[in-house]
Image (tube, rainbow over all chains, first blue to last red; front, side, top):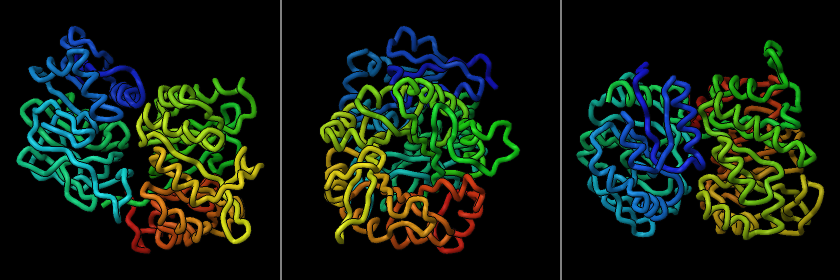
Length: 200
Length: 251
């Protein structure tokens, strides 16, 4: 374990942020939740869990100054679920401008034959080698809950399928994003979090 | 591809599981946290905890249990029973639950669903619907199944999803505890009416019942209590059977 790791979790301590803290604690990693850039700046790693809805979440990041700070962060960053979607240029969820770190537009799953949200355990298939997925089986299951999805592009590290192929893991430089919830994905999820802290 | 979810359900009263369990080697068979960890290790895809405590005084005990479950288990879990306000929803999520099931309160005040979904997101809100077959249709019951609302179950399911429930937990009271199988026509009727995931509940007794709910009932997940608690089947039994029947499961 990396005892020197100090994870900053961007956000307020509401909702499922608790789950991320719990998962890190199980790995013996300290984590601090804050929406103050001055606090986050002391972290060795940043996680953006992102709960709720894109516009509201983005506005909160803008208000606190975290979005401006994040764009220039040089430490390893992991966006989870909505936190990953906010890395993109744009989300069709209330037509929201994202952080613009990863290129592409996040769109809603078409309802029809599909149930939306996409909720449950799905496989994650790597399309590029990555430290984040190191030691995780090529078709490992992770837990997803989302109604919007990111496109498969050159910045996609792994993809999943739900009626359409979508990006389930993305990377641009030090910025990683996962559409699923590693904090809720059993041993594979813990391995991914460990990789993020120790390898990324 | 998305897999079918197998969900053991634990009834909790005053911080203890109420029904007996097959786990005789557990240090304390009544401890829901220990049981949750066991089910999670055995391959449960999610867990549901229903607080059947009768009084408000017992509520803090339940929340303390939720916190302990969240620290012990890293698969998703839903909590329900006596959730009456957005403040209750927030307390449960802050304690570490992933989803909150609402039942009587949203029948009394349907706008609570809109409010809850707007506050925490539809993905964390489950509408639990208790149903009895009546006069050739299905009627929604409230207050732990003791009181008829007179409402049609399919219409209420549609309204609940429209107001922001991200998932429906549909229990057939006619089948609950009978081990006769889920009410498939009910599941089909609701599944065709709503675009959100559907959890089938009430009646599981044999492996075929789980298959039928997923394959013929169109459910996305199956909830069961006694078959797991009494050791009729393990989660591995269920998943092996379903896989052999052509239903995708997580290993």
